[in-house]
Image (cartoon, one colour):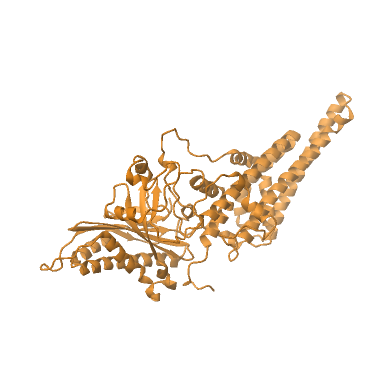
Amino acid sequence: MTDSSAPLSRDESTRYLCAAAHLDPDFANAAIREFLVESTRAVAPSPGVNSGAVLREAIAARSRRRTRDSLLALLLAVFAFCSPAALIVWVVVAMAACAGRMRLWQNQKVRGLSGPMKLALALGVLAVAGYVVSSTALLAQLDTTTTSSSRVTPVETDDNTGTVLAILAVVLFAMMAAILVADRLAVWALLTRSFRRGRFESNRAVGDRWPHEWLVRTFGHEYFAFDLPSANEERPDRRPEAVVYRGYHPFVGAGLPYQPWSVAFPLHPRDADAEPETFTLRELYDALERDLTGLGSSPSMSPSNRLRHLTAFERVVIPADDLLVRVGDPATTSILPDHLRRPKRHLSDEVVERISESPLEWMRYFRCFQLETWDRALVISAYLHLGSDERNLYLEWTPCVLLPVRREYREFDELPTNSWQPVARAFGRLLRLPVTIFGRFAHAVASIRPIPEEPGLLLPEKYGAMTSLRELAAGPEVEDYFQRTDLERYIKVLDTRLIRSVGEFLEGKGLASAEFMARVEQVTSNNVHIEGSVTGNVFIGNHNKTGDVAKS
């Protein structure tokens, strides 16, 4: 059993997202559309995820699907020309299979069958369908040949035309079956070998742990002119980050806001006869960071001493709309020096210090505290923003929760390495092919293109980030009781320590903290509370406005 108190080295989130690219075409397409197509779009931070590895798998998965569906569409078109009568029968069988698929496989009796029985049932249905298709093709073509022979005396080549077309139809049918089987076997090998827990390495060069693994995982890379974002999101240094976002939510990549609160209060001398010390906001930020990151000194404070891994970093957030209307301003140039490239991901210390002391309406500074728990399945990020003058202090605290990866992206860990399931699933897809071919063809010919833009017009959609790879794959809820209690534990601990640290800092500067404590207690007790589990509703605001923890 691994030691959970050890550094967070397990790359579970990256592993699940790499698998999701091959399991879910919508995820792969969304990842490519958001991160690779627009060469000027900002890259949203994705905690605990190797973005480069996931995007490489998304490209390979999309290229594989498009090639597969293009070949199937072409072969089916030729099949229809060779044997239209057989195609009609196949369409009828496919429609019946599609209509009865959910009823059949969700039926309790069928679900109770063993794996071999299900496989035998699928193969039996396929055998009957194949027999009907091939027999109908031969009978239709032989009937055509007989009819034409009774009217005229054809040459030998014409006598054999019907038979040749019928044989060609059977060959085409076999080729389509082979394509689907090969595709399912390749995906199965990826899930059970390449992405298996304990064997997956996101930074490992693609080799051949099974035949042609390198081809499947790098397919289409040479034809896709992509600019991969930073390969790893581990923050090797403490350089301040800049995030240009689009839409409403400024904390892109952090998940859902959870119990935010803010308070403003006056500053009074603790002793009327003593002059309080002056302080800068950066001095207060640094003091709070020292206190919060020191919470992990006690192993009993958090399970597996997870608070020992609490990290702090600086972040400036900028809405893309306001950034583009100020192109050319000195403040904008520090973020977007070239409108033909992505906005800068890191800022100089001088720029960040200026923004922290004098924030703009459209450019805000935050000190961020982030904690990755449960093998990076659950990520808590808290954003702190301060403002002050000689007589007042403003504090804004916004915790966010990044929920675990969807269950359907994690179920592949239960798949057996050796199984006939991929073959059975391929045959099922073959049976339904005439009905699904239109969607396959649309996917094969559809391209993901950049947003069209008129010359001289800068669109916010081309520059601002709206989501991260990790958010694209996040599930709708916390699925474990202990995850729920840990989530509440960490946020309450951070809240309590933050309040205590601010009070101690003020006392140390000769300022009264009693009014601050009273204001915070009033705000936190009336502003936010949670009822039930985190899968339910969260009540936010003085009037208990309802919001949903589930991903919208």
